[in-house]
Image (tube, rainbow, N blue to C red; front, side, top):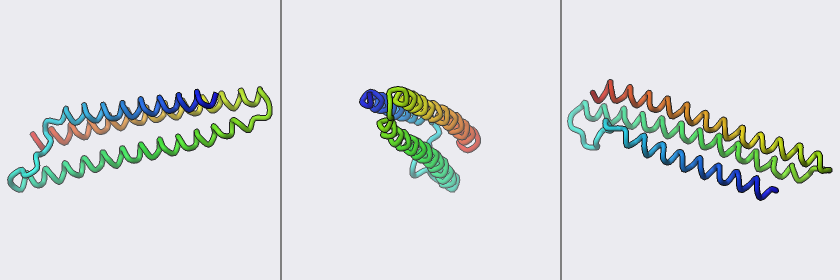
Length: 134
């Protein structure tokens, strides 16, 4: 039973990681206004600095997201060990159900947060491209 829960969490984590990688690949491919290193003039340098700031902010958001996910995963693993402390079948059923609900609620919250961050990032990128590059 624990193996199934762990396997489900593992599959969900892999799917989430794959989703993030694909999202960032597609997002980067959409950025035609990426400043090229060595852009000439003062405007090129300002653009590069703004671009570096933008990318740094995106990476910080991603780091916060991953740290939040990691903490939730650790909490769920701790709760998994608590399930084994059940004294009878009914308590085991209740703890297992609560763990399952908490794990999937964590995943739902993580995906919702990721979608919101992606929307914010695309909005900021659009502002950057339309104001700075155009």
